[in-house]
Length: 211
Image (cartoon, rainbow, N blue to C red; front, top):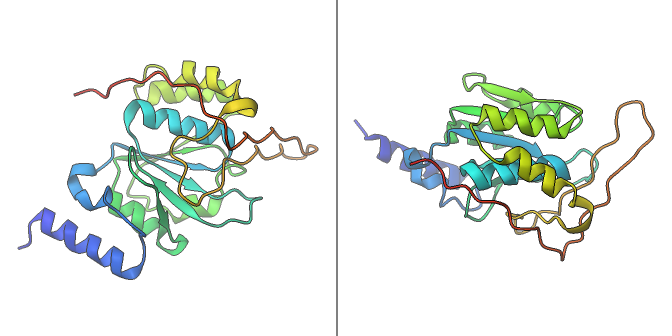
């Protein structure tokens, strides 16, 4: 019988052959990299910032989905301190199952995360969706849910600077910068100004993960 490590290596090789991943040094480590939490967001400023801050404090990887308005259908897996990996939409659920996180946290309602991606997920993995019109309260809820310490404070501080100087930390090689927030339902379109590509984010308070 194959050991788990050999089985994981075999499965990873199959992913490479079928073109699921463009590169996967992070995922190739198999059971050593099984994430406690996998965060799923679309490429809008507020949820993207939330995912970056969660990763900064807990090393949780996140999947960056395309926005409804961008016309760019690419999906990226963003692991901590590694290059981002492009995922084919047809292999989205297969890739998530390969990661096998203990839980999936989806940030935002259907206007932020297209329902078809959530419907693709294997329901053997618990899915928690955080949805509120108040992003500050969402940060507080995630702070509690994920047992973090500074997410709500850092989100409040940095979200106030979104229009001026926020730039995603783990920007995928060929992915677009974070898009604007979509308009509220049944209301005239109102968007946030996109962050200038050349500006840098203010340093985020870093918290070492628990041993």
